[in-house]
Image (cartoon, rainbow, N blue to C red; front, side, top):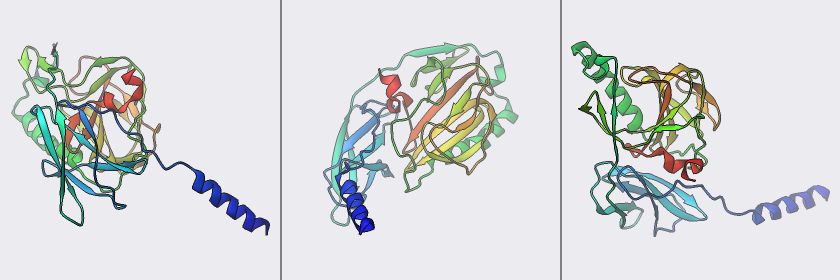
Length: 278
């Protein structure tokens, strides 16, 4: 009788609990930002949503479905369409993108080969580029991250924000695709959310690098590390140490380059970290 009452009490308490509320990133409808779009679809099964013919992350918050979309840095201003694929006729919805002009940054690199690689370097860069692109483009239907609000991967000042239009030794290069956090060599780097280490290695530009796949096209990247203290295939939880800060690859000093990729688009990591939005 006691067990029956205990079971009934547990069931009542369980029913009284609030619905799971997935914490979402900050909405920022600009190139390099993240669009958080509430969907009209209200079915019980997770819908498939595509943007530019690519699948995007879909999650539920307070019984409502949301699409979380990475906006490319080259995205034009105006309305952008999403397709919601269900068992019936596909539904269409849209979100708006506004123009944003990012600042310039000019850096002096002492190692000239890191600015103008030789032929042998270019062969290596091409080989590594395929590996990096594959890691960032990977799609897994399971969402391993239990929250889309991340913790800070390492302590230190933000030395270079996302999106800067960069010049190395006065030569134009691609925009800054991540956030730089300055810290002394050896400072621990921690996983900001649950995921699996999908790739790691030592690269020409990025130095010692780790990729964590959080599921549904959400991938984080950690570059210029001094040490990699975790192996590929390892499942990590928020707060687990994956390595330490260093100055490997193309750098001007010790720091962590932290990148966030969403539907294979590099976006501003600040949008996932509440502490950085204050």
